[in-house]
Image 1 (tube, helix red, strand yellow):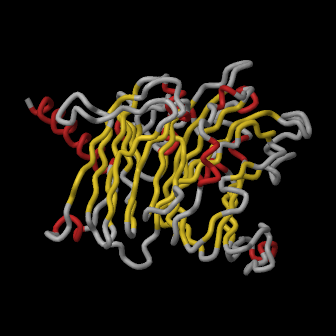
Image 2 (tube, one colour):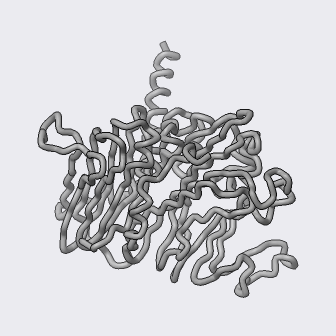
Image 3 (cartoon, one colour):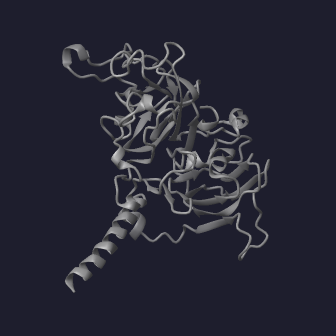
Length: 400
């Protein structure tokens, strides 16, 4: 009767709402405006058991191009779907790299662990999730919906240092949209920060030399593992006290000489070219840590996890065991800079307060892994050829 019909309707409505959360909102112009001059194509790779039997798999020590386009007017990658099998999940996460090379340059501009790129960070054990730009479906199906434009050409590759053959399936969607002026190149930057001495050592979220602008940050994803989970009990106490600090345009101090407000008199603080958020959980959209009742989150499961923030993995505290958390945040508006940027996570201001001074051995600290993937758009493609030797990135569990 009515209850049964309402139940079916409610189920359908939930599925539709989840789908709306899963994908980036398109403007009315994108949906309703016919663009016959724009051609959509798709590249298939890895799966050789169907219409394209010559498609290769990915062998140890080799690379595989999964999409290449070359156009004098530029173009736009609109979606990357990838599912990988073969080696164990923890090995796939960090022993296979996603590499992107723009405009036939002699160097790549993106070279990151494939699992971390798709935010599947906790040893690739993350629960299914939906976010503004990335999703994981059951059976380890990854999706990237971040727009990836290029001016002349783009080559997307997988590079393997896995112990055995990698199989699976991938497709890449491409639109022949022109590259407009003031368009930024998509970049993903990974900082492993494995073996840090908590809380005495800050965690960099960008290379030591920083990045050049103009550009802006659209989001970050964090994977944390602590060697003694009980040191980070409850809602991931203590580690949540790290301040996220971004220094823009050659500013190197939190209290720089360009501070526009005397916070001691005004009661609030703001500084030109400095972005400081006082607490890691606040940066990721939470308060007072990451509550444990939000395990298995994600819009697909109906629990907490939005297009903008959520938690994809949450370990309970275990005596004498490690503890792992993975979480993400995409901002409502990009965090913009003009000249350059550098950033870190800093526990120094709270050590001796919310982080007890005797929590970890002084100087030696507690060993943690604080791995951050950040997503940027920059005016020019970075040269990351100096980072190629980082493959394979080891899992935190191999260090801690």
